[in-house]
Amino acid sequence: MKELEDQLSICMRCGMCQAVCPVFAETGRESDVARGKLALLDGLAHELFKDPKGTFKRLNRCLLCGSCAANCPSGVNVLEIFIKARVILTGFMGLSPLQKIIFRKMLSSPQVFDRFMEWVIKFQSLFTRPDDKLLGTSHIRLVSPLIGNRHFTPLAPLPFHRTVPSLNTESGSSGIKVGFFVGCLIDKIYPRIAQAVIDVLEYHGVGVFMPKSQACCGMPAISLGDAVTFDSLLRYNLEKFDAEKFDYIVTACATCTFAIKKIWPVMVRQDSSGLKRGVERLAGKTMDINRFLVSIVGIKKATTKRDYKDIVTYHDPCHLSKSLGVSAEPRALIQANAGCCLIEMPDADRCCGSGGSFNLRHYKISTDIGRLKQNNIITTKCSIVATGCPACMLQISDMLSKSGYTAKVKHPVEIYDEYLKGL
Image (cartoon, rainbow, N blue to C red; front, side):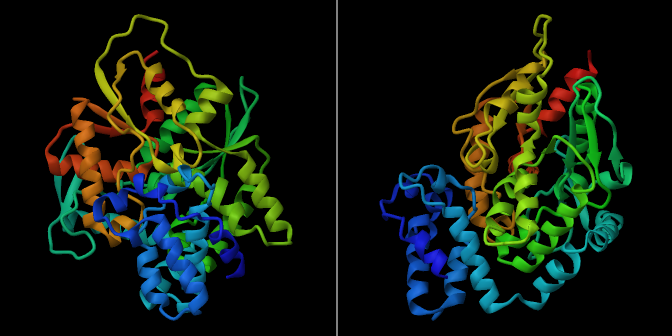
């Protein structure tokens, strides 16, 4: 708590975060903006947990998008403060019985989690009805407090780990070998993105190490404040990737990249064992797939006359653009495809409103934020919306499906892979 107090003192309460917070823009509540939350935490520290539940509830009305941190003139590490505060509060109050089952029994065990999700795949068609064939969205047949009126992307018939359980290929013409961290959403909902990554790396002569039975990056657990599950997942993944030597570790998920590169080191900062060194070593090698292809490998650009078949617009995921500074590289992959014309949408780097579990807890606010993104997309008259985050893909698909606008939602690496396959 003392460490948290030291970080809280940096905030000048200037209010710059108000101008960029997507939640505050919708609610207008001071407690929903970073400055208000920091004031609440400061009060919590002095009142010795008089109202931890109330503070935790307000603290969770946050997308963890990083807009406030990216625009803070004092350099307050807001995301680190909020995450550590959630850990303190969850440690103090404990998890609910349902949360313990989901996080401690399922998510922390990749094998159990995979088996459970495969059972969901078998029966999901009984409870869902397709909405939009192009977007691939469905809605629930029955009344569900969890799903509500969402138009969601169902689980893939076959998760990626069933198609390609593991991989260990030697480097080719590039002389580079990478570790590939797949991520839960890509594995279970968008396996086509994982396959595109493998195909593109193979084309460029990059060796790939993909260990069997990878676990979640831990972001869902740490967002809830569950440090026990997070620590278990971190150690599990670290052991998996320590089994082989490689030059970089790449991911196609903005949140996974952010978690490994930024959150893992933060959560082991006080560790005095070899865990800290291992995490820092892996974090230093971690890179978003877009940046890796553009900055390290070098992409193959179209040399023939451009023949535009698709108008593509790009949405900047918050964890990718604001926290990691990756913005130009995904656009470079899109523009490498001679059949794609990139048209920028207004406010491309504005949060789409997903925020992972925020979307489950605060769907109305999430939808209100997402509707702004939906309208900005529609103004471009695009046929494809690209983004480097599978969670953003889910949110954008939901918004577009309910609006009736017809467009495909893709990852930039898919667009680049399609270009390479057409050569």
